[in-house]
Image (cartoon, rainbow, N blue to C red; front, side, top):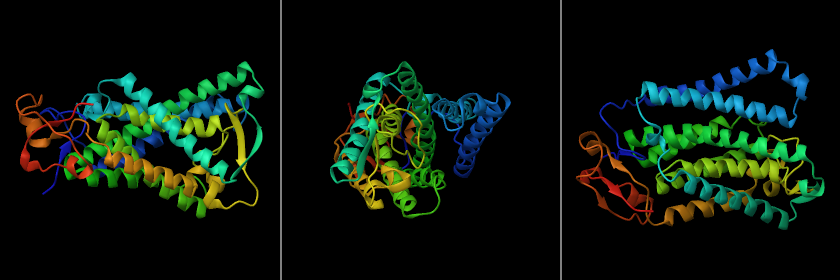
Length: 343
């Protein structure tokens, strides 16, 4: 029997669900539309000549246009075709609290990764950070790129842990929801660099990131935290330490310190051209995070599908229940009740 659930909000009679294959095709199309919009704007305004190819303003423009347009298209589809509010993909209550906590967790995870690699001799210092060569232009770059990564991180989470995870879980159950969004998320990053050992380890770690963030969203019952985690990870990695983000580098004075891979070190340690996301040290840190979320007691609000159609508010059949692990969260649909654990 399929343990079909609504993850973030009750499903109501007027809500539509996009077919699974169509949803995957659409999210790829939304990213393509964002890429096309960015290319047109850059060419029409000749922005590469104005700012310089590979400059931080160009990185900011690309992040805002590609991901901003993609997320806008996806949100429009959810609101106008599926007739669903954004709460159904995880943008529900306690936004500031959950986003702030997600930022701290994202900063903590990537700081642990970089610190462990540095302690093992994987990096050497290339230059001081902004504190050693302060400028208002440097501050502006960091702030603009933070906004860019906020948009980028939120966009990927809207499509993966918000929309696709929720659609798959509502049809096939939590495990299929996790595996499905994990596979699509990994494939979207498969072309970042040429096939290499770094790419394969990097893709393995991206699989782990998808599992970790799926569990995070599931346990919290919200998308706010994972959006912040994703943005904090990318921003501090590329802008805080001057390291590659999934094979992409940013031309900016880092906030903390400018690191580079130490010579004659193994790819498995610092990730080579892909950056620390292709390090086995990252694998260990992410696996520890996955274990933490699996063991975390309690879960966010989840709704049994049949009840969500007959009793959308879930007021008549609600009962509190703690989930000791992921398996407990995947409760049997035979119970036909709405479960909620307070945070």
